[in-house]
Length: 406
Image (cartoon, rainbow, N blue to C red; front, side):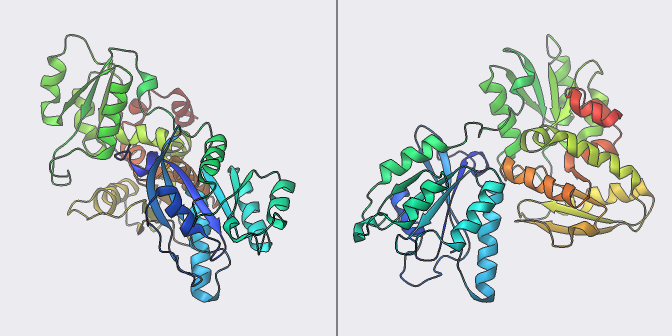
């Protein structure tokens, strides 16, 4: 369980005012001093993430956030960071001090939580201080929010809280199958994984590992090879594979070596479906046809990493796009938490595969682009389009193919 990637864990965010006891709660739930606890308001600044396991849910991530009543210019930034956590939250815990109860700050955030249709549990903290039931419990009950009385410091009510978390965790949390729904038991899948300067030393990258694991979980047979050995690999099989999956960077070579009666797709396209909305990203690929020299393109990555000399996001894709449009494009690059504030000024967003973020966050990023009327495509889909093989790699996905043909 401890090796489960953060992106695959249920995200439980803890919200509340300063000194409501959020950090004490995360320490009580994890049985560790993860978050700094102090009587000084505003101790928690940026969100704090802690992976743990809550049975029978399984692996989760607890997120400790800054107080929703923080003040000053820096406080406003902290509150904004807290609100951004909603876009990766699966279940919200609203922690209140019984002395202050549920007021303006809590009501506003509860409204935003409900706008995103997230389950919410009320947590009335500090019952060890002898406060009688009052405003907080009554308001939670009137708003039809399940709640529990606890003391994070004394570790009272923790089991009752865990039961509420289990009862109200979204039942549809687990993401769609990565590749398993395309297979029958004993089907063979060939995975093409280039080993070049950008490949990590001594290991495969996360999308490759996750795809192989999903094949095994569905009783399939996974064969891993480099593109330089693909021809011999295919020739050595007694029967043709159910599917060939390749790294985006060697699409063209793999397409030429894979017989046309063998379905072909990529890790990035699998992740486009698994993490987000493949149909929206295919619609974004169609928008590439409308690009012209001088247009603005945002290349967005969800995580930060060391750039290689021939980096796919900052070098290769920009070069390929400029060759396609026949002139220079104005590129801007972002990585990490979100988009730049002027998103609607771009003609296209080219996003990474999203392997390090949750499906909820990737869907939010797609939704944000669409609300700004900016087409969005991911690396794998745009590379397949630029290499002229997008129709072929969409064959396993009829609904996405329909979008492409419209």
